[in-house]
Length: 312
Length: 298
Image (cartoon, rainbow over all chains, first blue to last red; front, side):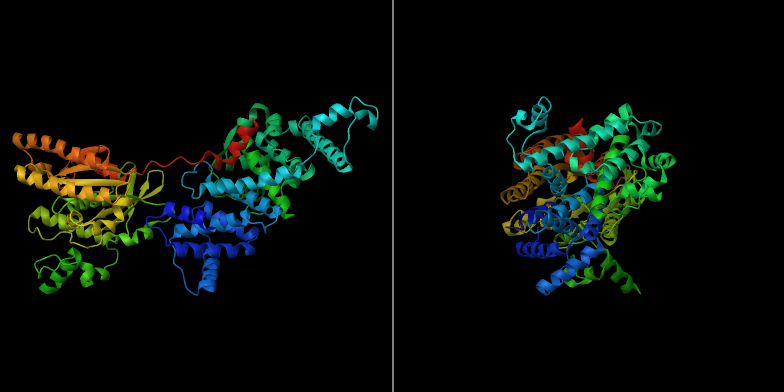
């Protein structure tokens, strides 16, 4: 039963279907590998997958596990190994045993590596799985801001009143805390709006440098992640019409490095934060020729920085 | 010395001329010695790397010109010709191709009509191609002996084990135009064989709804007189009606080719059709999650 989604994915890409018993075995082996997954192995598998390769460490780990469980060697077409590479990750995300934090981190890793396929999605295998993997971060973020009373209801009750009794609100202490928290979050939102009016921000001439600096502040100084809001609206507000400006990655890096102060350049995880690493290390990478708008660059960088906060 | 040369020829052609009939290379083990020979349908999965290649099945009965056709395609590709923006890069089945070139040359010289693909011989050939933009694309060609398809006309068991037709992206049906435009009896025999073949393929659900197919009338250089040209027009109509009825749709195109003329326009159009990549299914737009997030927020 559990192997049905695996069978469907494999059958779609082979001329000759694999034996059902073998598919069940492959599922069992993949399932047993879930417990051993960590951020490093996930990065390795996703990176290979997005480049149409199979991770050597995955192939070896799978071979060893299969032999351990079934006492035999298994020879699989390369495409099946690639499917299995992602299947292990999918099983981890679907598992009740894996913590939500870890799932969010895995989801961000998958999102960040997807930049390797930007503009060239057709050859990507297991597209439904990838889209499902993206969604785990959204679920995690949405869970962070659960509140029993909505923000505008609180505003309308508190602002016209002079004391608590006047508000007519009958809410628990936890709900009061939730509301205070949501008001503080609105403060974060205001900080961003305030910053983009400052000369420090306005004096940056490149929109790519502007988004880099703004995103750094949003993630590192202002804990924007707790708002669980997409950065898109704020980036558009900050950049005006310049959000559409489009450049090749290598040129974007030059512009960013020309204007951004060194203390904003970090030492990211080179593998899962490719654009950040490209900026901070200034070493050419395979996707240097890909084009990004200032807004796209900002969104990618934002989620890479977010993933970095999990690593901190 | 002479015997050694003959042995080498036998290995290349996959035949044993001393027996007078084509000997199955796999049955006698000779074929297994050859590196880069054609592969069997059971090895189709081995050709899949990062994506499933395009599979083209060349279907026709003995002497309809399939191997000559393949030999010409290979010869043109290794001369660096470009089809649909793709040029030849490599093959895992060079020997299989070379053997067909050899057969084609022999046929050209009219030295032998026994040196051709034989029943049970491996049939899968691959072409690795690269586009002008550097993208790779692989085409698999199934070139079976005509006898294989003749067996299909009379035995469900033979058809049942077929993996090529049911997986094919493009079916290329060959008809010997020279034979087809002879007397009516010969034409009727061609019709009868194809009806038998198509009926069994249909009954065994080997022809999928998504498959494309074309018809290729070969040896067109032998159909010269007005009388034979007229016959061909009429017989093409009759045959294509049978294909349409059995496959459930009309052929994408009907070509008339001379496979021994490397500059033949129609021949090059068929090659173009075979080489061109499949129209790729559009990727789910949700994959570009950044674009989706931007669209949603704006």
